[in-house]
Length: 183
Image 1 (cartoon, rainbow, N blue to C red):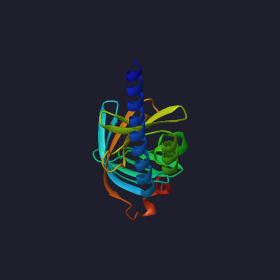
Image 2: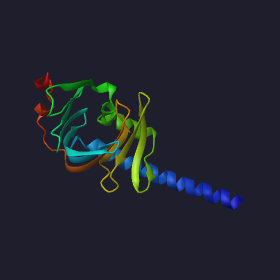
Image 3: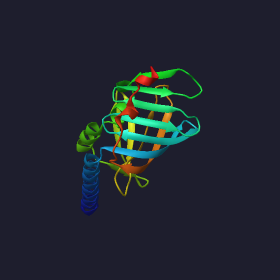
Image 4: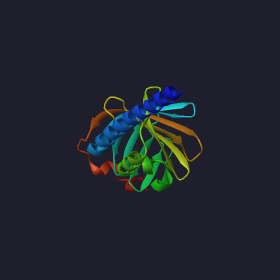
């Protein structure tokens, strides 16, 4: 019995050490990353959409959806979503959305310093909570870049976003995040 307990404890320590090492590597990768250009697949309940985004880790993002021509832009404080089939843009305070934390590199790093990256079904992830909203953030197993997130939107829909990084730390035109033209 003692041998079983010691074996279990050793296995637990080895797994904890491995997760801690992976977490440190994810933090290093995040610290070196200022922005990503990526393709995405977003699933809201059963509906699937695709597109391209530029994410800058100061809470800025600019996304264009492929088929609907919808756009999603954050200037770091506000978020707009505009459908091409409507003249009306939907404005949101970014701090009222999960993007407020997903796009915040400092928050992600701070959370990773107190929580280890978990592994499940060959996925690396960390569970976060913001304003009673659960956010699961995924990381690429090979390059340790952000790989996506899963959360609930403001309409209580399950939202899963997978991202496929194309470029890291490219020079970005800040005008991409200017939402004043949508007022």
